[in-house]
Structure formats: C-alpha cells, structure tokens
Length: 457
Image 1 (tube, rainbow, N blue to C red):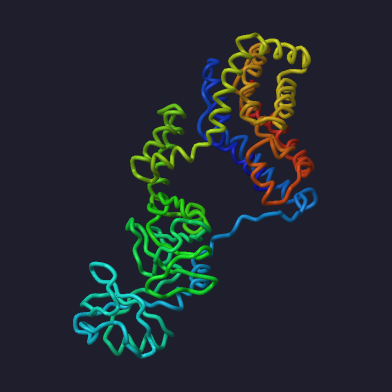
Image 2 (image 1 turned 60 degrees about the vertical axis):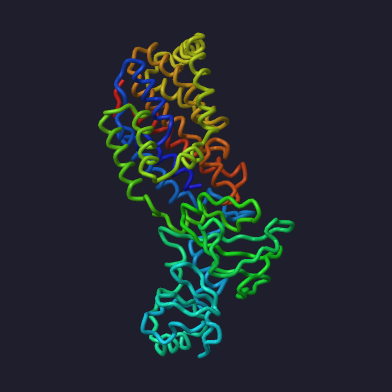
C-alpha cells in the first residue's frame, strides 16, 4: 500500500507523471492561459511525496494490515543459479579447446579415459560425432570432477574456455528458456540431445531432464513431462512462441528480473532524457514529444513495432477516447455551466479557497468509484466554468483538480496502482480506507491550501 500510494504522490512531480497532467495542461491552454511547465507540478508534488513518506513511517504499521497473500509472483532474481543447480550445469560441464599441437588431434573422442567423459565435440561446421577424429580448434564439453578435468586438460595441452556459470548462462545478449513437454504434443518422440542446435538455428539444447534426472545420451526420444533447457539470444527468445510445449517461465519475465539493464538500455535512457528536454523546453507539445520518443525507440531497435503495440494499455486508450466526447458533451450541453453555477452559489462569498474545497470533494468522491482519468475528464469543463464564473485564473483550479484526481486512496478499484498491490499483499477491499483517509486529508490540504501559494488566483 505505501508503494501504491507513493506512486500517487510521485506522479505529481512532472508533466508526464500521469495522463491527467497532459489533459489538464491542454485544457488550460484552450482556456486561454499558459500551459504548465514540465517540472512545475513538482512545487506541489514534492510536499506531497514528503508528506506521504511521513504518514507511512508514522502510521503505516498501525493502519495497514499485515496479511498473507494467496499467491506470490516468483522471484527470478537468482534464476540462472537455480537452473545451473537444477540441471547440474556448473558441476557437470567444462569447455576446452583443442590446439593444433595437442595429442588429441586426429583421435576419436569416444573411449578417451582419465575419469573424464567427453559429452560433445563442436567444430567449425557444428557438432561432430564422438567416433570421428577430433579436428584442430574443436571445442570439447567435458564431464567430471574439477580435479579430473584439470588433469585431463593439462595432460593433453588443452585450452580452457569459460565454464557455464550464472554470469554466462544469461547475459545481456543471451538467455535461456525452460520448456515442459505436455501430453499429446506433436514433438513427443522427437530425438534431442545436449549440444544440439534446433532446426531454426536460434537455440542450443543445454540439457534434457526426465523425472529429475539428466539425460546425456546422444539421442533421446522426448516423453510427456520431460523438461528441455534451450539457450539463445534475447531477440530470438522474444520471438519464441512454442505451440507444442509449455513455457515454465516466460522469457520476458525472466529478462526483466535477471537483467534490468539489458541491450538497448543506454539508448532508451538517452531517448528518455531527450524527451524530457523537449517537454521541459516546450519545443514540442507533450503529445508530439512522446510520439517522437517512441518512434526513436523503434528506429534504434530498442524495441520492435510489435513490442511497442503490446506495451500500450489499450483499455486506458479506449476509455480515455470514450470519455473525451462525454467531457465535450458536458461542456456543450450546458451541464458543466449548470453544475459550476450551482457550486459557486453554494460556496457563496467564501472565496476561491472554498471553490477548490468543493471541487476537491466532488472529484475525490467520483475518484474512489471510477477511474481517476475518467473523473478528471468529467470535472475539467466543470472546473473551468466555475473559475470563469468566479472571475479567477484557471491555472490554480486546474492544478488543484490534478491533485484531487490523484487522491484515489479509499478503494482498490480507484486506480490501477491500488489494484496491482491488492493480490501480492493479500489485501481486502476494506483495507484501504484507514490509511487512505490520512492520505486523502494530505492531498486535500495540498489542493486547497498549498496550490494558491504557488499559483495565484
């Protein structure tokens, strides 16, 4: 809950913190006033973040229930080490190169003793049969104890290659995927073996396991329940969508937890900084700046067009698109003017601070029941009409509205952030309002008392 509520407060720091800021800024310009600067929101946002942290530290343990979640998302931070231990990769295999002056050149790999078992021979043209002569420059996969492998390597003048460890199993270029063979799969009975390259050429079979035991024979017919560990580039893993096997852990989920800064991270950060610079300098409108940044991500191959489309939350896009006509209808039908006039009549001569309080109350109530973005779209024309009726600037009213719309703390359905933490923390529907009331009071104080200090009427 502190995580979700902290996100609410943190969203008030910049123009791109929430879609509501862009909607409100555009509405302010349409009302004939100056648009909000990129970091202008931080004048109210910083006190909100500090206040949210203070409330969480002082009252969090008393008001936030400590429950056991029914399900917990797996922690894949040490996934590489888990796979190495499970399949015995680190203990079982060492890789050595055969130089031209080694006595092994020209000998068949099968039958070589010394306590070491050669499980794979790889040459320039791919995997070589164990009964065939070992060529110069071949790479051998050895199975045995560390001492046996060291003795064998020294005796035959071999060159050590990096062993398969957590840092080489998954890195910024390559990763792994674990598959389970389901019943009635078309690939049941197909022969695979460690070191084999798949027919697509994108993956190498690292291990095959049946009932918890590694299968090391050269050719093994797959059975239902077998697990296969494949290794390939992250690009290939992103494209991989098996229809004949089950993914144990989706590669995208593994990549996010194991490699938070993967390929393209530097380009992504530079493009993000460029977008912020465009927004801060007001060279482009927020919409144009964001679209240019996304286009740059695709052109520089940080992500593909397919990934860009998949990253869009189309539910929010459709909802906002559907609410914009409703917002326009509220304004053009006269409903906004009627509601605003009624609100101005109620606050009477109490002044603009009372108007902000009334707008906050209405916005906060709606924001607990429907999306805060939808609430903002409904309230924007009402707030602008109220500001015009009272003859005050729209900027403080609009800024107050953004804070009121972000104060959705009392129910889990108020925002996506509230709903996201509900299942992992084991919260119930009624767990939010106790701590949420304190947060709502903080946002009310900022909306009514703090905003007029920085944005005069």
